Length: 239
Image (tube, rainbow, N blue to C red; front, side):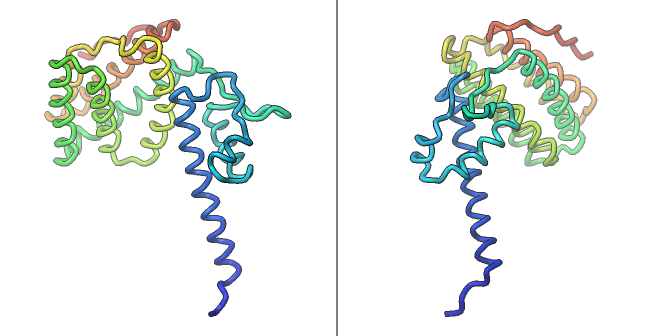
């Protein structure tokens, strides 16, 4: 049997290493978000190497990316230490998220893709059912689906990736809040989602932008309040 060329073998080894550190990265990120590893805690390399069945190299590759994402800090002679969420970071995240989702909603309203509209309508309908049944856990799951459908519907990879990166920090704060005050945030009546949905159905891209931005800033204010942090100025209502 002919031996595999060196470049091919090296390429496959590199691809395997890349896929390995991506899988480790996704698991570690989720563990931090869901509170397995707390702020100020050092990620134990020997334990994690054994858990993932890898050497330190792919693990440290994942640590470096987590540092760029603000999830950990790499401290010389100590290792990767989990960072604490900061109010200023969450305020900044929601400010950018509000603009990203507003731009996505504007695009979705302008294009009115039947497939995207179907996803949004389904999510809106099921959210209302969850509210009527008092199932706030299911409501928040569907709420995430609604917002994801808008972002995905814009068909902009850069917007989607930036949005996903910022949302990990929001999910982290949400998990912290829910551990101490389970689903304490009022779910509301769903009127904001319905108004945004109607603007999109009407093809009113300008109003869709304004409603989405106002909605996200409102969520940001509620998140900060529930986390016990200072609240930013309230968003003005779109006209």
